[in-house]
Amino acid sequence: MTAAKSSKTVRNRGCAETAAAVRDGSLTAVECANAALEEIVERDGELGAFLEVFSDDVLEDARQIDLESHENRAALPLAGVPIALKDNICVAGHRTTAGSKILEPWTAPYSATVVDRLRAAGAIVVGKTNLDEFAMGSSTENSALGRTVNPHDLERVPGGSSGGSAAAVAANLVPGALGSDTGGSIRQPAAFCGLVGFKPTYGRVSRYGLIAFASSLDQIGPLTRNVDDAALLLEVISGFDRRDPTTVDGRHESWFPTNPANPQSLTLGVPANWFADGLAPAVQGALEELLGRLEAIGITLRPVDLPHERYSIATYYVVATAEASSNLARYDGVRYGLRVRHNDDPGDTEDPTLDHSDIDAMFAATRTAGFGPEVKRRILLGTYVLSAGFNDAHYGRAQRVRTLIRRDFAAAFELVDAIIGPTTPSTAFKLGEKRDDPLSMYLSDVFTVTANLAGLPAISVPCGSDEAGLPIGAQILAPPFAERTVLEVAKLIEESSDSGA
Image (cartoon, rainbow, N blue to C red; front, side, top):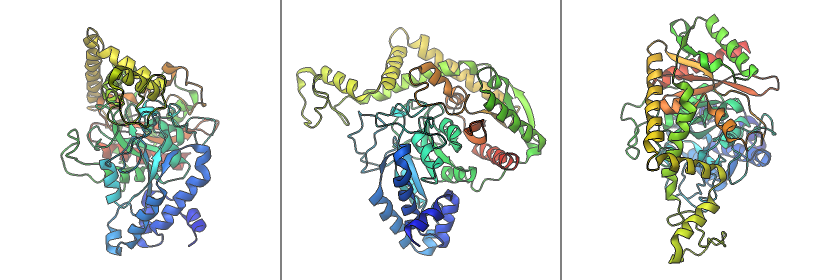
């Protein structure tokens, strides 16, 4: 099989289908790797999805998979599947920039747990994708290393902060990718790019090797083109990790392949305030049409009340910025990454020796040159809410409201199996449209931040498109560690959309 034929053959295959073909010998891992590399060369120049492509490593890893015995290859759930990683996930021997100048020179000395698990399952790690700096943003316009565009419309954003991963999958450069989700950074770009994006329960997936934004909110999860592939990737990367004490110590669960739930036994909660003013008419129409289809196949819909949900954005931007302020204090020019030795010489980073006459000036110069405007904004907000005299009034109060939000969901889940609503208030907006309006940008995550605050599993699944053909996503949330419920409902939506669209 020629490389060109390989690209055409592999292009539209998902993760599960690709792995099955490699296991049965109808495709080789090298053919899959070459196809991904060709697609990236051909299309990524206009998309800006990748920051680094591991070309040599990709082909060597693929050759090793092809050299495995048939029996060994048959045991690999992701045999030969090219996977992209958001560039806040460490891969040993490669740069991990988090989309920031301050980490641009840094090479990771170790790999994240999710990377080790992907490779153990036979996946081929293709490279690193673009993101909003330190995962702080909703459009992937905040990256210090270039912007990413939406494959559905090159004048629109792909969402953020996992916009590079979403664009890579939506453009068929790779069949699957990993992102991170702190307040919607997997689900929002999934909705904008017409993908399935899954944020697992907090503690389901190890955060070891993930560059921290807000440690009590961050989770790694998959972006794929269908629900089964999301289930497969999640199954591979989840489980206890002694290097991350927040992970759950329990039996590893199996979710792949995903079976749709029995509609007649299912009750879905519909929060009325998610369908109020501010929701774009096309999004509201698509969700109402979806609810009608689900009700027609026997699902019971029930209104639910989330009385403290209206405080979620304010709560999130106190908790998240406070944790960001603490986590990003480590980037000081001393231990790793960018070092600026003099205020008047921001490019002087080659000489590792320090002028100790004014180390505070070095700290200030490094952080001024290394952090972008959005990161600086959030550090300042976080430092303020943690400062003496204001801690309890802001951070302490936000944590108490977070508890109330979690209790609201717990009460709702006593009445329903899962909650359904929109993922985003609109479809993908134009590049630059909200960049200078932080509040408007923050409101892009109004429906997603609650899952992170409450530690819930949540998925975005495509459910239609607007008049311009831009994708619309529906979001499903379920009780903690009810990933199976989320996937089963998502599978029903996927099947209803395929048959009803």
